[in-house]
Image (cartoon, rainbow, N blue to C red; front, side, top):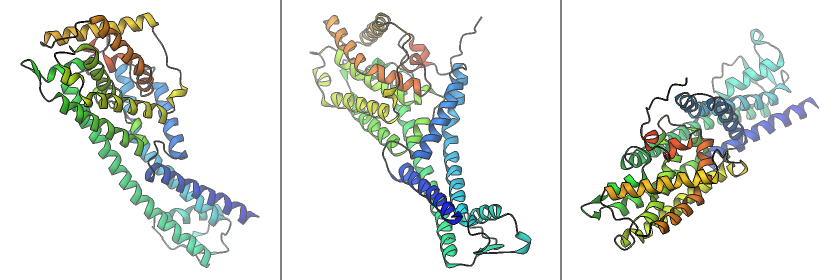
Length: 380
């Protein structure tokens, strides 16, 4: 009975680890395996609970530590569970099916854990050795599992950090074009020279490719969600906002007749559709649709904030020499409709990742979003 029970429990642990490695490392499905999911949510939820009670800079510093720690935690969890799983199989057969050196004799459970550990790590001191065919085969499988796990983990780390590097590069490009902040009008004005737009369609096309690539990175490696950059402009919520806002500005603020080519360009529709798809996919993969967005303003205040952003955008474009839509009321209705379509999901996504809405969008004050090192006001 002891042999059957320990073997069943040990085999169950090994199958759990095998499935989690498959789901987390080998299979791109937008979620980690059960071990990874529990670890990610527990670590992120605990850190976020504490971080939201700190100052802005303190919050970002604390959350910045979570992502890099999740990877070693996951690796250690795999190793401990593999050691425990094989140890349970050995434990029921200790010492009958093993040769134990006299000086190495210990309680059976210690011998099982010790032998499992040195076998998984392929150390093999030789003071404990199996002498039956079955246990020799199990030990061989364990040593192969340890070698395979190390190989997979190294590959996983390389791909995760490569994806993070691509994400930072894309964010830096958006950051400089947006006047080093969250000014989507700045991206459009950046390409306006001597009465014409130069390269705006190419920039939007490149942005579409970048954002689609970022979605695939998050689907393949969900742990990337929890890498919280200290600089807000490197965050995914800021990038999503800039792209969605840029499309809204092009379709609601630009003079249709003067800039019909860019207004009707397919790349604008593609970028808008792609960015919304990315946002909705991330919202779904994190299970955020079940969360109620924390609303801190009335519908009137929300509309007033949008109106202020719309007016400021028109002013910014006119100051650059760009012709704006003649029917401002029609443009405002278009802008408001677009913000209504995606803001609640983006707000929920940004809040979950530990960002204030204003530091993502700068709706009330672009300086707050532009100056990442700005000191917080002293509280009296």
